[in-house]
Image (tube, rainbow, N blue to C red; front, side, top):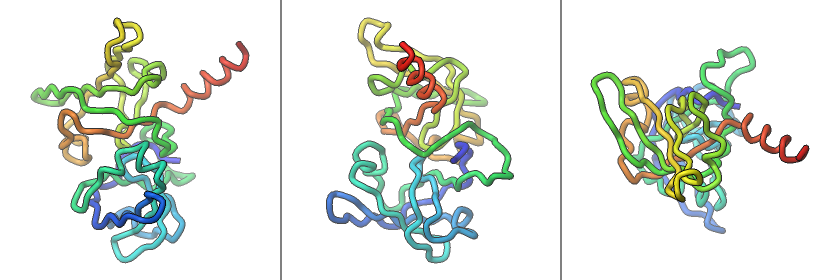
Amino acid sequence: MFTGIVEELGHVVEVTPLADDSARLVVSGPRVTSGASHGDSIAVNGVCLTAASLDGDRFSADVMAETLTRSALGALRPGDPVNLERPMAADGRFGGHIVQGHVDGLGRIRARHPSENWEVVEVEVPVGLARFLVEKGSITIDGVSLTVVTVVDGTDAAGDQSWFSVSLIPTTLSDTTLGSRQVGDPVNLEVDVIAKYVERMVGVRA
């Protein structure tokens, strides 16, 4: 389990296509590889991957075709920055919220509104995900735990595109990939897992 508190901004070293439309990523991240072992989990832009091998400050991970098509990892190229986080230790501080590293869908940066001390970013949401978002609730964007500011559900707005907004503080802008994401860029979204379980249980009872 992760918390959405990015430990470091690493970068992609290699992307090697494999059979069955899968790929092998080699990522550099000295902090997350420190003390890591073969088989450990590391979140890359919010996607839980397994370290297949480690070499100094680099680790490799095999990414299935399903993951490449359902997340933004398929668009990564050598040199691209990535948000990295190791799983939370049992005795660690719970700084963000419950993050599984399982991407629910691809969002897209809709607009950016900079101001003096923070920046408001609007993100388009795939059909079916907006119902899991609530104002002041939690959302994970590219592995970053954030608080939802506003939600516009397209199903309640004449069929328009659903979207939500978040406010990014200077630390988030400088220490994660969200500071460089441009309008139109895809981002990995993971909604609050508690909301999904509640919907499931309520639906079963109904």
